[in-house]
Figure (spheres, one colour):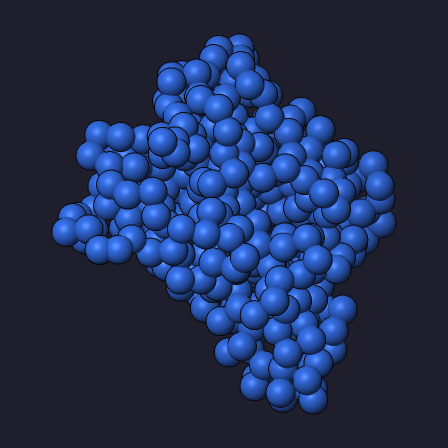
Length: 345
């Protein structure tokens, strides 16, 4: 499948992404802004999620659309971040109409990055609300991958007792739908990768997502050959719950209902299983959000959805690998990035 122009979730028309991070804190925020209220859903797959306003887009909820999504570091402290994006949107007059007022709908999920050596001595109030406002202000078509935004302070397993930097990754895929007379739709993914498991196979530098790579977007290494004997051995970054999470967003410009958007989250989660081992553990808070901007009407969304879900899973697997591959430098505690750990001879 071909990628979109930027090979990024931003290839889905109607979205803008902004990042902000603090190097001393070793944490950050990513804001996904929608140009109009956008159909959205979410599914949790890990055992230790941390979210805000997820009920607003639950299947039993009354809203089913969002003005923005927020991914943040900081664990539970980072849940302040959505307030910063809400403030930005309120200034713009955006939100869900409730009588004479509007309330911006901004669901959020957080990851745990409190043990990476960053200075977490922020005093009475955490910095995440202000950082998120900065991210919303910076939202645009171009944004950094790797050690940026919500992925700045993230880490993953890289072998027994070995960690490396996680990161923020993105990818896109164009899908030609036979059920729509060949109409092309765009599917994109964004991931802040902070998994308790590994993104690379065994002790090698090869990515689990290698079979889905397009055009050497994360090094073009392919799968290891011969396959390592220890490939099925799970490496865990930490052994305690709530300290890891991969936060994912998939998006399409196809017009989907709330229920169809929810199904997209479920299908897209297969991409996490292609890129992370082990995944969906009780130690992670893994979540997948989905957005459908509705720019491309569908005559038969029921027939189109399997193809959209397959593309979302592919794009998400690639986004996860790209987040690790594009990371740079070391964290304050010395945790190296992928390119440092697997430096070429």
